[in-house]
Image (cartoon, rainbow, N blue to C red):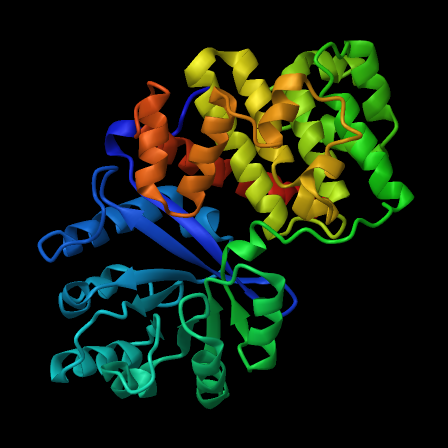
Amino acid sequence: MTVLLDPRQSVHIARQAILDADRRVCAYELLYRANEHDRACTTVGDLAAARVLTDALLGIGLESLTGGAPAFLNFTRSLLLADAARLLPPEAVVIELREDIAVDAEVIEACRELKQQGYTLALDDFVAGSGAEALLPYASFVKLDVLETPAAVWQPLARRLASPSVRVIAERIETLDVAAQAREAGCQLFQGFYFSRPATRSAKALPAKRLAYLNMFSALNKPDLTINELEDLVKRDVSLTMRVLRSINSAAYALRYEITSLRHALQLLGMQQVRTWASVWAMAGLNGSGPTEVMSIALLRGRSCETIGHAWSGAEAGGALFLVGMCSMLDAILDQPIEQAIAPLKLTAGVRDTLLGGTSAMRAILDAVIAHEQGDWDKSTQIMRRLGLPASLLPAAYTDALRWAREVTTGAAAA
């Protein structure tokens, strides 16, 4: 697979969703470093890091990165005072001020000017009685750390801060109970690993339509699938048939002759491409209400794992790892434990073992992608090096996946 971003010019960009009470994505926090060796921004490198980030945003496109939602960007004191925010479009970003900024007259004036110029500000890890209290008049969002802070401290603080002009974000939510407590305390927005790794709940019987999509997804990914079986699977779903025909008629193929049959279209597109796209469409149907953050994460993981798998051990490994990445979110999509979610699927032993937490190179690749997704640069870099792959391949693969996932989800929503 060709990675769209030159690894020599790659930047590390991960994103984490910020959701409302109905789990709709309202924004994404973007996490970045200039290269895989950086552990944090430094005074000297802050402005350079902002320029690298800006180049990445312009190169990738904010629409691909966030789907039109605002992007929360972490700012240090030096970035703030260096006017780095003016490198970014005010309508598309939220300037998130780190909790370790020393608040003084300069910082207050910088915030006042940014608000006046139309920028939106957020205060990270807000602590009652800290210097950040002086920045509240300029902030539209305040983040509370609900993992490290005792509930007796953050709950009354959330009630005090929430207002029509300030939205409180509960961050680092890791359990369903804490998410419920944050909602009751007045937090309007939510962020944390809980939403990417939902807690295990009681399994529910799947509606017939979702069960049909699950069966289709399983059948599509049989290692020995034939063209006859693929044609039969696609024919069973009118929307899949239309999508295949729409794909083959796109300008990308520049066909000079007419498509005579569905089989003809499948042969022209190629077995692997049809299986990949049909799997994505089946997964979108399985997800129920169309593309959501959970589906987006599944797509990003699948594509990123595929790219790294291809570099690691060729096209066959890439195909298996695409399936691993996609299926790694089935527990969230089906609201079932992962072992139950994958039970009906005809997966190879290697793929099944990987999803159940087995130790293997495939599991290492999935773990590297998840670490990058969550902004854990140290872990993702270490894993890539253990695999004998350049650390720069992962952010490049993730960038490609962002573009691809945006294209796929836009198409799924329109269909």
